[in-house]
Structure formats: C-alpha cells, structure tokens
Image 1 (cartoon, rainbow, N blue to C red):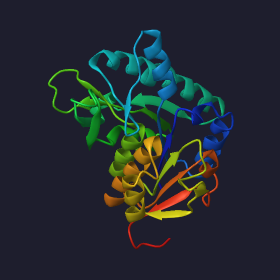
Image 2 (image 1 turned 90 degrees about the vertical axis):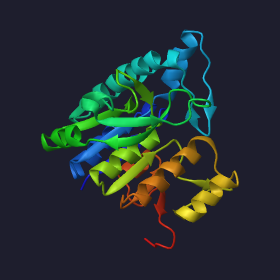
Image 3 (image 1 turned 60 degrees about the vertical axis):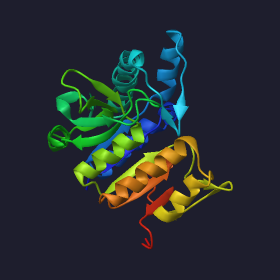
Image 4 (image 1 turned 45 degrees about the vertical axis):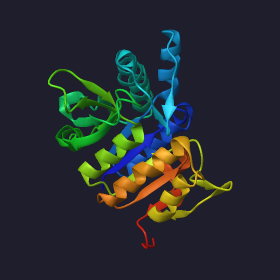
Length: 253
C-alpha cells in the first residue's frame, strides 16, 4: 500500500517530524515524501535582492528564479531533510522531479505565474525501483518543461506534485501535511469535506492561499483515482483518524 506524503515548508522544522515519518515507514514501508521549502526559497530570493510573489497560494517564478529554486529545493532543503530522516533510521534518498525525466509539466500561465508548471506526465519507474529496493524517495517538486527541447525546468507547487505522483503510483492515500490540524471553516477543523463543499469554500473565499492550493490538489487527486486524501498536521502521519478526510461528492467514509 503506497502512501504519498507532502510536507510543507514550516512543518519541516517540527522536531517530531523525522521520528513520526520513520514510525510511519516501519508500519508500512512504501512511502514517498514530497517536500516544499517556501521559507528557504524566500530567504534565498531576498539574499539575491528578489521579492517573492504569490497568486492563489502558488509562487510566481521568473526565469531568473529557477536556479535559486534548484539550490533551495533540490539542494539545501532536500539534503537537509534526507539527513534528518536517515538520522531517524528512515532509508531516505533525495531526488527531484527532474531526475530521469520523472515529472514533466506544462506552463500554467506565463503571463501571471512565470515559470510555474502543472504536472502533465509522471514516469513512476524510478520511484518504483527505489521502493522495491527498500528506500524512501524524498522528492523536490521541480519538473522538466514538457514544451522545451533543452534543459527547461518548471517550478511545480508541492501539493500539485504530490497529487500527480499519487495518481501515477495508484497510491492508497495522499496525505498533505500542514501546520494546522486540518481544513478550518469558521475556526473549526472539518473531519470530512467532499469536493463540492471544497469547491464552494474556495469560490466563496472561506479557504484561501496555501490551503486553497491543497484543496485544489486533493480534488484533482480524487478525480483521478486516488483512494483517500487527508489534510492535517504531523499527528496525521501516525494517527489515521487525524486531519480532514476529503471525499468525492456523495461518498461517505
């Protein structure tokens, strides 16, 4: 039973994270981790005199930002996480969506978002080889530009990347780990939320920014066959009752 777990940038600083992931792996050693690194990207951009911009919870990425993203996401963030996970006895291996052409993406809207892509193709063979060999892939969400004949790269929102990998792997669960206990509506964590309610929450501005991006990713994953999607805090890694369970419209769990 393959699980895909996306860990957000702020969650990565939680000292409990490595041990919880290792415990989850021990229970079911078929885990793929996708990570963000927004704070590190922002800090690196600032160091180079560049300003971060976001649209609907997704980072606007100029051509000049791509090497910075590679350094922050596939470099420092990825290797820092791998070191922490290996230290907790999790056999982690760091890769990016660019490796072996694993993930390809198409530009979302260059006029407003720049070099930001939506995953269009995933070749899961590398992930399957790593899992079969007893390793836990830790994936940086950069992708090859499907429309580029060279070494083009696109920045992919981590939630979108995790959803695409979960679909390709036919994962039993996609877990989006955030710094809140689940999807909040009027300050209350929702135990369950179907796609119609989620779409309305985004449309009406009840859910915004990064959480809206998570709901979008969850909706897409469910529509393409992922069995179960949850959004929650690090507790959700080992507590299957924790977080908000997303369902298709009219489906009870």
